[in-house]
Image (cartoon, rainbow, N blue to C red; front, side, top):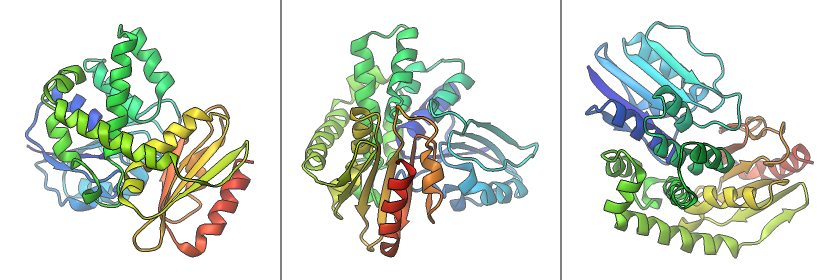
Length: 321
């Protein structure tokens, strides 16, 4: 059997796979990329000897390739929490998908699947996906003290931070290389102890980029919503996801849009729904635009054309008014 692991390059995708491969070690081919690179199944041509594990990328965005790979004879195991659309019914497809809850991430789904065997890695995934309340509650229930949880939170933030960029050249570590550094460790604490250089590199980059972000000005801000525009710069591409998570936590009653100019003149947009105002789902807003998608609490648009900029801002304002 040939194993192929396909995973989002963010904290949730990486830490989900760390759990899976600690539970069931395999010498697998790794397929990943920057956070917004989610059409990953297109890279595979399968055979009946292939077992494909997919973690934390939208089924809806990959459904045609799922069908193609099944027809080629592959076995597919699919874990995710993004908008899924209609799922195929096939004997070689196993899905563990929950796109109905804003308090779950792929790492937590894998944690449930494995019976909590690598709970600390699931907590890193949840912290990386900005599920802070969920992760703190589960962590305390699992016996972790506050100091340990704060360290897991920092690691989740830094791994997630490393995933944002227009291309892999924007990142400090290629996601597959970062996974390979993490995978040998049953706990994140052991990884941090043995890999202080990796941890400190991500921490220093995060702090420097966050300082640049905090010096930026708003396009507009009201009690209901706010939008910020970043110019085309490497630091801006790296920090966009973690900075908007930080804003969402600081102002839980407000929706946020972080708009970053791409090199080709289009715009990459991150959207966060208000943490305290449920029912206004970010994926529903993002899906109104080509290349948009995500989940209920957090969504995005990969390449908004410049002539759609004003329509997006107006739609965002109205949606969260």
